[in-house]
Structures are given as C-alpha cells and as structure tokens.
Image 1: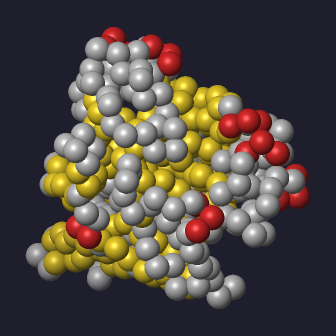
Image 2: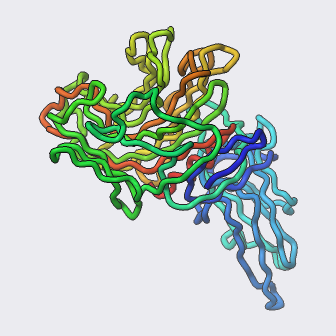
Image 3: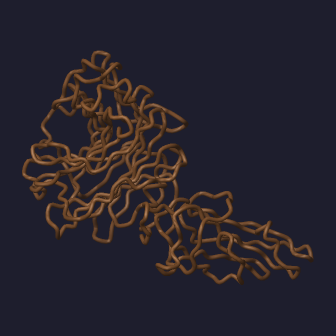
Length: 434
C-alpha cells in the first residue's frame, strides 16, 4: 500500500491486518478471563434472544489492536435493543456507557498483559456473567517497569508481505551480482514509492555456494538467504542480503520497521566459532564512513556465537567498531519478530532514538530489548548529500569463522517500513502469523 502524508511525502507500508486507532480511556485493571480475539480492529457482532424470543444484536467498534502499546481504549457499541451492561476483565458489570473508556488517566492505565471486555444484555431477568453477548480480548505490550502511554498512528491496511523500494529498485547484496557498483552510485528519491513482490526477487546462485531468492515456508511467502564458507567476499564478508536500495532515511524523522527471521537449526553457540563468529541479519547502513561519529552510527541486529547472548543490537562507533546496545538469546528454527522505532540524528535537537522489540515464537508477546535515550547519535553526518537505507539478510563479516558448520541459512519476511509517530500497532500487525 502506498500512502501520502500531510506534508506531501510518500510512504510505503505493507501489513497483513487492518489496525484501528485507540482513543483515550477511563478505568484500569489487571488481567482478565480469556476470550477468542477477532482480527485486529475488526467489528464484533453477536446476537442473543430476550425472554420474548426476539433476537438482539450488539456490534463493537473502535477496538484496540490485538497487540498494542496503548494503555487505554475507548470501545463503542451498537445494540439493536435492550439494556447493555459491560465490564473490564473481572470487574463488576456496569450500565454501559458509549464509548466504554478504560485507562483514561495514568493512575488508571491498563497494566501490561491480556485484557478482556464483556458485553451483556439485561432482558429483565438479570445478567448471566458466564454468557456475554459479545467479548473482545487484546494484549497491552509494555516494557518491563514502564507504563505505556503511546497513541497509535493512522490506521492502514495491506496484503501479503512485500519487498519495497522508494524510487526505482531494490538490489541484491551478493558476490558478483547487480549491486557491484559503489553505494554512492545508487539513485534515491523521496517522491514515488513502488512495490516489488517478494516473488519478483530472483534467486542468485554463484558457483553453487550463494543463494538468495523466494520460497514458501509455514504458509508464508518468504526469502531464503544462505552463505557458505568459501563464498566470494563482497565488501569484506559473505553476503546474501536484500538491500532496500533507493531508501533515504532522514535525520529528525520517526520511522518504524518490522521484519521476521527464522534461522536454520545449526545457528547455535555450541557449533559456532565463538564470539568471533558474527553476522548481521538486519542493518541500517549509511553511505559515508562512520568514523566521524563519536558514539555510534547507524544500527544493526546481528547474531554471534555467544551462548545466551546470540542476538545483539548494535550501532557503529568510530572506525566502524560495533557498540553493543543490548543482547538476548537466540532460538533457531523458530520465527523471531522484530519491531524497530528509529529516529536518525547527530545533534540533540534531532532527538536520535532507537527502540527495539523482539518476539520469539509465532503469537508470542513482544519484549522491549532496548530504549536508547536521545542524544546518542545515529546516522550519517553528511546526510544532506548522502543517505541511509535498510538491509535484511546475512552479512557475515567474519568469513573465515564458521565453527563446526560450513554455512549460515535463514528465511526472512518482507520489510514493513513507515514514516510517522507511534506506529507500533501497524508494525506488529504486519508480522501477524510469523
């Protein structure tokens, strides 16, 4: 899906579900009973019969996303007949206001975890708490020890995961492939956005040792990346990356990215080459050298052969030396989803920001890995004439260190990318099913 901001800039967003905005809300509470959850933001309509046998229906609207950072909600309803009561979690039912607001003040903010609203008809003989006429369940994602106050951005919708490029093309970062020119030679544009389906990405096979192309896994169209010991070295390492080629990330602008990867079963510390066995699986790259930055350049997410700390969020410091921001365990042969909020900047007035969430396992909740405070510089100091862009795939910059295995292989989803504030819900919806 291609959209246009009020400022006239074009952005491209690819997601799997529609996500509706949340409103501010009014009462708080802990976790409640479990209930089946519809697609994020979808209306819920149920019916029941009153004592005279006539049928009544109730439809819920303005629902929060199935997973959201917002600690409040304002849920509306439409009922065909009868007095409606509602409750949050296991609180007592009340005569239902419209909207039913929850979490309106910081003191009443919804706690992290699962919440349920139940709606009942009072047909004159009371309320049966075991048989709500309508229910909705969602999860509030909150970093440990942190209250969530974010408000989702504009609702968007899309179809299957896609690769995308802002401008004319993507490129493959692979030995002897189409991206053989210098980074400076790549064109970019802030105007028209184009979509390239994952099925359009070719398979690259160089001497039988390097592969990058489309596949289907777990019912999803995905990319397959693979490098092997002895591959030709490109820019210092073995590569099987999809480079979102014409992107230009700008300082002082909020961007949201989301992607999923599934590492092969041999990505374990036990058969690795130890701490020297390292490769990025995602990076925001810059065109110029990072040597002019004091505390860090663009960032990446890498894997390294250190038990319990295989996943590392890092930025690049002086002389391209990685600066560790956070580490987490890795789980091979399991989908790992990442959501990133990135604000590039090299001055405090640009408020540089890096937030990263991770979820391990399909349907699992997100954990916030890092919340890098402003004033830590990220990005290219000469960005007025150059650019930063994102890559997904394997870049093994230690090509001689594989341990007891001779290859690295993984699958990846398309990349969600959007410009705007508080787009966590949309980013999470883009990875639904991974």
